[in-house]
Image 1: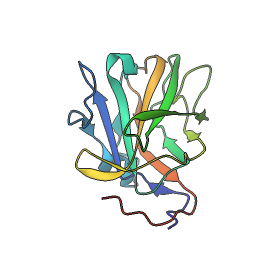
Image 2: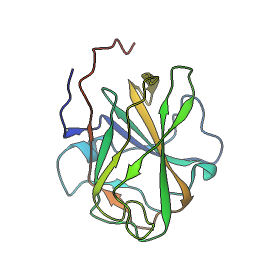
Image 3: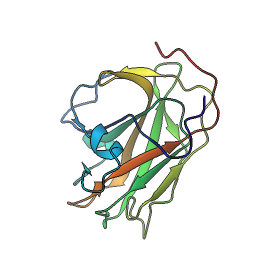
Image 4: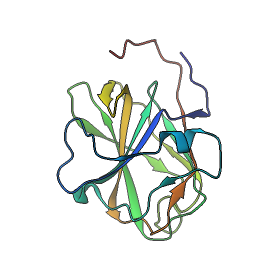
Length: 168
């Protein structure tokens, strides 16, 4: 299966909790429609997103294993912040992705539209979260916080050819 180079993500949920993120989270604002409808007038609100230590993150789901996300950022971040990414592993834990963040300007992630790329892991597996089964990624800030008016109007992903997998 090949999803193409500009395939909208299936789910995008902004999670801002007050305690440790549970194994199957239910809290969060679902912006899946806003980032996949192709309209520049609908957006996901990323205002003041903080670090994973503060229980803040963005969960993104794709149908197949991704190797790149491309963010369209109409309201850019102007504060110092470093993005980190994780994927769901076959041993049922989150593992770090080594991402190249092309949205950075002057140490501020999501300061411009652009891509975040990584090498697709060989031990990634689908999982169930927020009412959907797919390949889930967790993006959070390793340091800093986003500005007060950061928005994304579209998030797409790119993947290589993959074997068809039963995600159930």
